[in-house]
Length: 216
Image 1 (cartoon, rainbow, N blue to C red):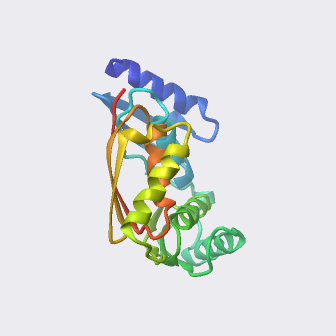
Image 2 (image 1 turned 90 degrees about the horizontal axis):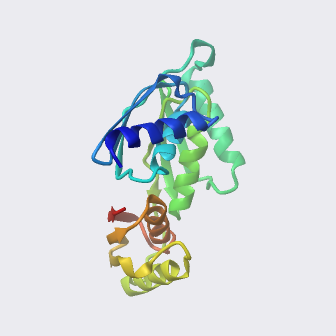
């Protein structure tokens, strides 16, 4: 696929997504590397635009240079914004009560502890949805139990083998002190995300080093 064709495909996908106002988004592509520039009205739109680009065949990586520009009527004081974020976190049953949030000029920093990566992801997702947020920095510490490295590697490989979307033989798994390192080559971003999700789902994992390549 040529650079122009890739740019057009990503642009069409952004236009197709009703959650994203793509009027002020510029797309450029160079050898599979897509760059998004311009402005969006919320941090949620910035995240959605990146996800839209990842779905396109031929995209190898994404430079998300979109800026969040909050309209005057949507601006909120930091104290009010922090209250809204904390309330949303409290109402989500997947987010543990050990997670806290700070807000500085619309920029949210999540702190505290969680036992699982999905809890960190959920907290980030919830905070990103709050109107007035311009960025989310996830500083939540993972403090899970620590099973043996062999158990972790075995459980991750088994999870990959159960996944119909993923060729488990194409990804190697190494474990050391809670850090999982993934190597290999997969045929799509969907496969890549499934492999990374399988690694994060294993008990005792505190970090995932992603060295998986996308080869179309």
